[in-house]
Every structure is written in C-alpha cells, then in structure tokens.
Length: 350
Ligand SMILES: [Mg+2]
Image (cartoon, rainbow, N blue to C red):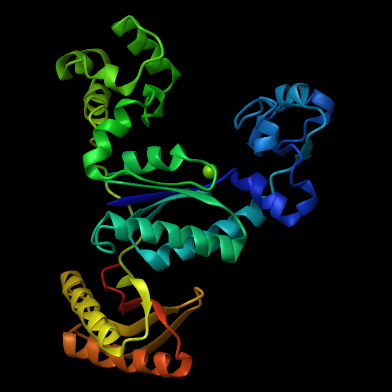
C-alpha cells in the first residue's frame, strides 16, 4: 500500500503564502525574463498563470510572450528547501519508509501502518490536514497498490486532491489513462507507440494489444517494463536513504474516544505489533515514544530513554503505557489517534 504526495504548484504556492497579495494574480517562479530577452526556464507557475498557457519547463521568454503582466519571481531555493524539510518531517511521522523524490514529492510505504485502504485514506487526509495547518499549503495525495498507481492517482484530482485506487479498481483506473501518464513514457516513446499501433491519442488499454515479445523487440528492457505497467504492475520499492532509525505503529479511531478500556487495549495491540516489527531489525532500542492526537488535531508525544535493550512486549508496552497514562491525565480529552514508536541504537557496521 503506497501513498504518493505531491505539493500543488509548490514554489509558486510558497510565494503566494509569503505574499498574500500575489494570490489570484498570474505568478511565475523561474529565471528573470528580462523583458522577454532572457534564456532560462519556468520552474513553477500558479494556476492563474497556467490559464495563459504557461507551464513548468517552458522557456521563460515564451512565458513572457504569453503573459508579460505576470509576476515573475526568482527561485528562492533556501526558502523552498526549508518548507520541504518540514513537510517531509511530517510525512516521516506517519511512516519512516519515506522516499523523497524531489523538493515537493515523496512516497510513503503504508503497508505496515495501515491495515486497509480506508485506514490509508484516513492517513492521507490527516497528512494533508497536518501540512495545511503547519505550512499553510495544499497538497495532492494518491494511494494505490504500488508506486506507479499512487503517483498517477495523486495527479487525478489536483489541486488539493485525494484519490484512493483500491486494488480491484486498478485496471479500470489505469486503462482510461493516456499512455503519457505512465512514468517512463515520454513524447518520443509515445510517438513510436502511436506508429506501431497506427493510432493517435493512445490510452493505456490500447497498449494491451502489444505482446511482451513485441514490446521487448521494439524497446528492449523498457518494453518489458511498459508491458507490466500497462497492466497496473510496478514492483519498485519505496527507497529510504538511511537505515531504519525508528519504527512505529499508530491508529486513528473511527470515533474520538475517552473510553479507557478501548484506549488501553488498542495501545496494547499497537505495542505488540511494534515489538514484532522491531524484532525483525535485530537491534536494540534506546527510546520508546508514545503519541497521542486529541480532538482538534493537537498531537502530543512523551518519551523515555534507557540503556540499549532488546525490544520486548513487557518493555515497550510496560513503559509506553505509563507515558500514555501521563498524557491522558494531563490532557483529559477525547483521543483521535494513538501511536507508539521505538528508536533503535545505531548499528555498528554503518
Ligand atoms: Mg508538485
């Protein structure tokens, strides 16, 4: 279960946030057009600028011709990278299986975090909400059974979208898409495919007329990839840069609750799951973190650190539940989300 998050017109949206008077005006972030004479390209255009036909990657001189009145701003990398870091940190509170693809795009592997697609959807919605509250920016989320489906789904309802493609819906979802929506099929490949199939405006379902042999013949290894992707398959993993630093489980209640029995028993089963996962790492832990989000989205964490120990149920539940009881008595409010996380010691061979 994979989630793909893509910030909406990121650079330009950050600039709008910094300068609310830009809102509603066509805004282009990129190189200085210098009255239309300059080289260089558009990095990001907001939706008002897109109405003039301006798009990312376009020559800035062309953009200037299309809309000389637009606001043109230089790329403020430092600012965007600060915002970007904050967004990825929010994402990593959901799952540490997080792959950053660019400034404004990342994948999360939800397989260990969500039990089903309804839970995944809730996570997606909460994630968007947290980013909106913290950074005042909208994002689009796609959830699907692999990276490709999640990515295409995040494009589906932009801006501020949330699209979940359940496994059974995958084929129907992808069949109607243009072949260009498949990552790895660019304009050149599209042309070649159009030529082979004798048809323009190719949809993904049209690709199914091509056999594996034929695709491999024409495109080599990439052909095999196209064959699989046309059938909704993609087995690439979410690649995290570093070893697992921590590992956690959390769950959102269907209804906010104050029932201590429900809260404690949920916490117990979360602890058990975390211990089972933590054991696979074959490393000692040094910290246990309990997370509680209350009604109104305020999140609180409490943690305890100790000399490195084996992750056992007694340890994780025993210490974790004490932290939880502290939080609950301090806040005394209905609980929306509950989580527990363990932090590992660094392994010696890294
Ligand atoms: Mg984006």
